Length: 303
Length: 319
Image (cartoon, rainbow over all chains, first blue to last red; front, side, top):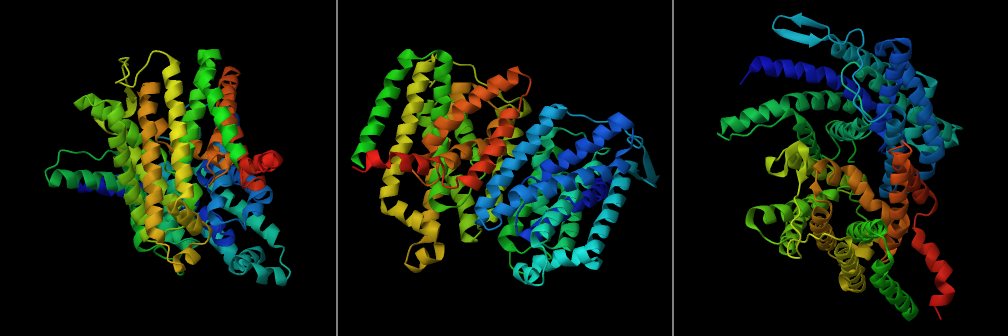
């Protein structure tokens, strides 16, 4: 077994995991407050990517700055989506809440396809191919930057929820909707802002991913699924759980295929577990977690 | 309700003589209407009658299609026989999913995610199998004969697809009137109440998922031999699962005729808009419209089009 390679993969996955955390944070925030699962999450992220890409193309602004614009645009989308659709389905049976959001996922995905075309794009930004070395390790600069920014944003969002009045109102509405209404909170507005913030998180994450991976309209769905897996792994509605889960899944997807291939070879099977099947690792983790610990690693209540 | 039966019989007779008057293209649209009505009906058995939403039904279709192909390709088994073996395989996979889902009490979104997980794992595995052409997909060279389920003309496919629909209608109609169907509806409406009255909830959910998976996979033989091309990226994707569920939702879940009505409404619309928008350079626009339709139906007509048709026809039918 090649240990250097594993460490290299592990670090690379860990860095990507930081961005996963930010994506999952948005999903978890929306779920924690409204008890609605945003099935359009990954597709909204793709919009964030395309916004940053378009800005890069038109103005040359690097995605590591323009992710702020992606976040703002997605905040607007999220706010609007909550006001028009999500607010009407809050009291639906859980299962029926799935379908309208699946519908919106199709709308986001295919409108992106109509606007930006179906092909994979990998824009060249300033840091695209640079890297830093530590001894035998080489780390891509864009990954390192994306990770650092994602962690900073995640911490800022957590701080916002803890310290500001708006953040306190959001947590109050999450804890007890009726109670929040009784003390005069405009719960509908809080919900819409909260959905907006959740969407902004995933929009920012999309911007940060532009220098790291090629974008196409169809890469959204896997990200939706990955963010579900992370949120269930960490614990539905637990924001720290989303962070931890993101890092775990990032590392697991990265080193999983290599480890399993080694395992196969170790027991004498002539089988490879290709990187393109890395999602199988995450789905396997999801199934095991759902069956054995449905409340997640850090979730308190039984989900 | 005798008049409804007469109406249905007239409808069936019209569909039986219709191919004489149709161009090959329009007949193709009808074939798709039947295929999606059948797939929707199969999904309806699980989700419509027990309320457990599956977004992974493309897995069962894929298993059916690839098993049928594999049996023909390696052992020379006719698809007419192979499809039943594929059906049992898919049914067993359905039971495995059901066992995990129902034994561990996964409900709502958790069950949806379980079905998605299994379907995605299945898709990724099939995508990497060399027998099935890996990422290139599988082209099937047709060898026209009845035993091979392969025909030069659209007419045989039309009648076979119609046969599928009639078969599924009879199965679901019988199921709805049997004890099994009534237990399923009871547990859909209130699981705890049903359980306290002695309904073995686990057992009837397992029966539902087995029938549903089995029926879905039977369409795999048709899909393979009608399109001559298999690729896990299209037919086993979540997008295809959504195609499957869209029609019964719009027509009316948990009803015998809902999926058929839904397919007659949506499939021609989908086909026309697909060709029309693609010509105009807006490929994908029909999926945007689908998306909005799904939102609108759940928000404004959660019980599907069939409840409105029933209301409109009530004066005629109840006499």
